[in-house]
Image 1 (cartoon, rainbow, N blue to C red):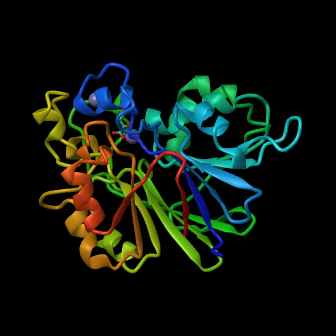
Image 2 (cartoon, helix red, strand yellow; image 1 turned 30 degrees about the vertical axis):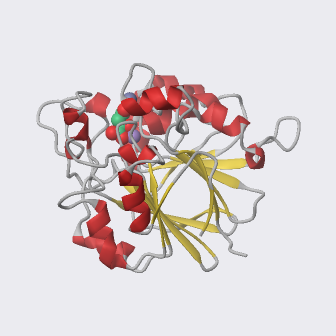
Length: 299
Ligand code: MLT
Ligand code: MN
Ligand code: ZN
């Protein structure tokens, strides 16, 4: 039995599937129940099945918790959720913090920069600091996030959140605004990287030979949103490397020898969300799992 349990609470990128204002092929199919719907990006992790940490708090968190028995309250006002960690300041990763405002203690972990973004948005003061202490995490410093579960943050290429963009936007910032997390419990190890603009040599080195990697599956093709008439930006401009094509994750991961590769954070424009698509078949053939809401992964 492995030590590390990971529950996919939400497998979609910002907007979810279906997205409220979108009538693309995938959103229409999801509304009709022809393909599985997906809530926004979040996972839960535990080393003992008793204490849990949430990585990224999506706007759909309330619904995600309600349908996940492992995360139900254990006593009148007591939750198995002991911590929440956020990997960037994007709305799909922080808005769910507001769902957790009902005076139950947990630790809130982020880099100093992401804590700064939260502090600048006073609505998050709804999380009482005496009950929800802000724990600032330095890059590269492993810490015990739960009994028996270690976490270490590392920089991955990305950008500031969309709502903080101004002027020329650097989509390859490597610092505290977009991070991945290396979780480990006993011999189990899992890397969680829901947003990543490019696979740098340093990141490839970190991933080499990893047991389990949950990775940015936002787009199939860099231009898919433009080609489908859904937007004007490429995936890379949004801070996400695509799955396919030159520099895509399918090719980039092939030589890395990773035992379990899982795509998370799929955008509704991505054809892999349709189980009958050729693109889904292609990623399965390449040895990837496409996360679904509610799926449990053992690392
Ligand atoms: C992203 O991952 O690119 C963001 O979640 C976009 C958004 O804020 O909707
Ligand atoms: Mn996102
Ligand atoms: Zn759509």
